[in-house]
Length: 280
Length: 296
Image (cartoon, rainbow over all chains, first blue to last red):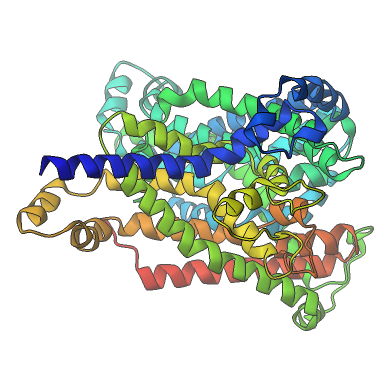
């Protein structure tokens, strides 16, 4: 019996490590390649990997310069921060109204919002481009940043998801606050919102993931150099000759670091169980 | 209705206005324009001069072999990834759903590709899929070589390009679906599992009779989301194969993008988008009918 158990544990470890290698190897190989000279990147034998002469930092300097990564990082960080921050406020406000306030036509309006959840953004991207242009959101830096972010702040899924969490709150919480003379705004801002923090964190994490990887919309609207995101900078480096794999991999690593850091910071808020309420 | 509730309801418009205003301007209005342009001869340079032309764009699309190819490719991509990714995500979730802390690192490993953005991974995988050339070969072929499998020109072979993109996409997205399943597994009733074990049910029977039924809603959610994501395929083929070889990885979204910005055929692009939306809506509806989401 005991022996069988040991074998099972060993098999589980071997299996786990094997699967982990499949998930990690491409990423580790990319990171290793970003530190190696062009000619050495595709050499896979271990001896060449430990050959210190083929290591270099110049890919990072070249990639940073060629992809104009400094400004692009600023644009990307600002883009995600604006979408996530602005979105958190407008979606939470709407979710709260749908969860707590009774008014005529509420259920119909909410049903209409829910129907938008399955609408893929690609379907409306082209006319959305014209709407942004008509509103003057494709011009200089400030306007273009608005064009990059405003269309994605309000999100049907986030309204639906946050409403579920507001509904799960006992209404007595707010009634008690109202007894103490708190107005509607205070009840929302000081009582309800802090009580759904884990749900807010889930929304932030999913939005950061989605929008850090945005490609189609920045490709359409961010045509000027000053509003180019990291992903577009990397894609340009990848598609425009001369193709330097080392620079590309260094850029790929640098484009990933900010979102990894953000995750390290958000990690304690990520509670798997929070996804659940949105599904039910 | 108490005074408190009345006071509350009066403020509703101010709470709703920001989000619903943004949705109206940036979602509903463009959606209306897409519908109108799809039945007009609008072109990219002067959409305001669009004139009614009936269903011409739609009949053009249905007879356009390139559109049919794009639709077929996208559907095939969905057929490849929806069952495989869902099954893999469920398998991984069951695998790492253990209380010991040691399993947490494995969850992080599976989730890592989700954190790295899709454009970055598309670029990295282009290198991984490199065929043998002048003594250099990508990691995929090198790894297969260890098992004695012959290397392939993954992205240049018309038969292999789309499956290669699908494999990479599953690897990238499976971690997120695994997290959703892990959340769902928290809701599996422990007493039923123990009762089944006492009755002598093996792991497989416990999975089929206890775990899967209680995961029903999660499954519907995962299948629906994966299907919609699959139909939004764009970044991988756009960066890795440019829709080639022989249009075998041309996706619906790339067709819409090219019809708009390369061919300036706004009307046709919008008709394609409307067909795309109709199809996604139909699929979602069908999935709900088949799986029949249980009301909790």
